[in-house]
Image (tube, rainbow, N blue to C red):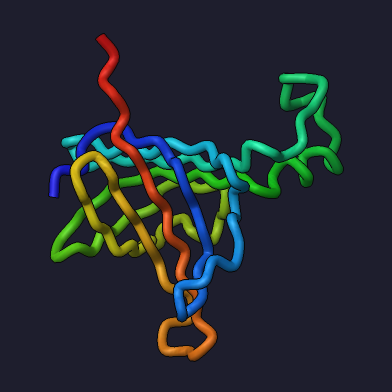
Length: 143
């Protein structure tokens, strides 16, 4: 499966066990980019395009209350990747969520042309389990 390159997020949905869309965690027009390097490095950044904005672009000038609002609808992590039998493992070295550092984020991966679909099941085996599905389009190389 050739996933090396840059991918842009076009859809992220939370699905019920029956396939019903429960939510769009990053909004109806999500922002995101994931990169897979040939040397095994990877990074991912996702954001809700509808999240609050600030009047400043200087991190040190943002209040704790505003920072908390900005953090809602944002995720980012990096590390290295490996894939086999449709299972993609992201070995996390740095993350917005400290609990992910040192762990492995396991994704089911499906590649159809220039569309990469990654999914993860929450609470596998539970009758109320849900699945998060992220759809990525391969970025067009810059000339």
